[in-house]
Figure 1 (cartoon, rainbow, N blue to C red):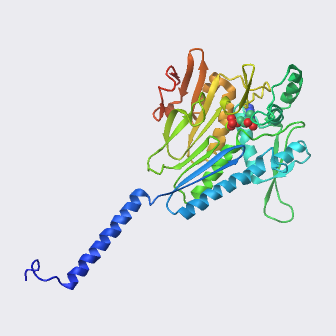
Figure 2 (cartoon, protein in one colour):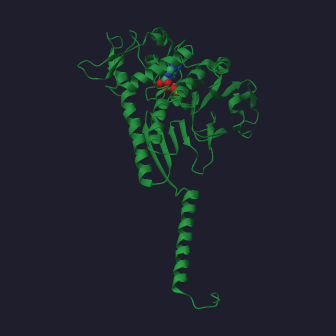
Length: 382
Ligand code: AMP
Ligand code: MG
């Protein structure tokens, strides 16, 4: 029988219906695979003295929402441990009695962050120094109590500067008493010292948040803690993230260059972030531990880029280094970078003939400097 002309059999109709349903299901699955069935959840808050934004992308809005909320909760939890402005935080307790015999018991996180801060202080020859707390609160830059010192303050500044010194901080761990299998952590500092982790805590928090998001299966996210960025995986468009470097001469959100990365952290320090200006002098928040005054840096900004190569502390380290390299100024910063090939950076320096942009070799292929932003910018570098 020529079935093409014959009457339709119920079996054939069912066969074609099943095929059509399967085709539709396949098309739907293909659409989900291509579009990611994509959801996007963004959460913003103000914490650690700055704007925090967590954006997570993927499937399942409910699980993305709970991941983003867990991220914000973690940042608040860490702020309670590290902040100098919260009475009873680990750091406030140390600062209230820095040289307490035997030290203060602190959380494992505070201990870990201090250990990292001390190690970066040593690596940067003290350009980054977490014992700079008394000077940070004296200057108060970025708070309502920002101070423009008079000549009469010079002696006080010299006194506060004389007690700065990371090597006086001591860390000790011990087994908990009473048969518990638990380690307890103790910290003490030098007499008259005050700790301040403002130059490294945002990076530490960004690392922790990234770890939490990854552990929850998030494959694509952007964490921004006041300009300390961590990019997880690839962008929701399944390409590398294209992230901007803040233009130090224009308001936040204006960029002079961009970099394409996946799984990376980008941390920027610049005088423009927090400052007061008086009689033409700019007093900013990054202090030189050797003078006690805002660093007289010839740099406008320092951005550190580290890819996720297994270290849990890339953003914290980048945070400490961005602050330190800013203090060092262009020449010392470039020498440091030449000796640390694992650290990639973009520096904007101020020169008589205009700004110059320095990009380390490892980034040259991936950083695009916008010529229209710095028309006269010279690219310098190795
Ligand atoms: P950042 O914004 O990461 O560059 O860090 C600046 C913050 O770190 C300041 O607001 C202070 O809390 C603190 N700070 C300032 N100067 C130093 C320094 N030389 N070493 C360590 N921390 C610093
Ligand atoms: Mg920093």
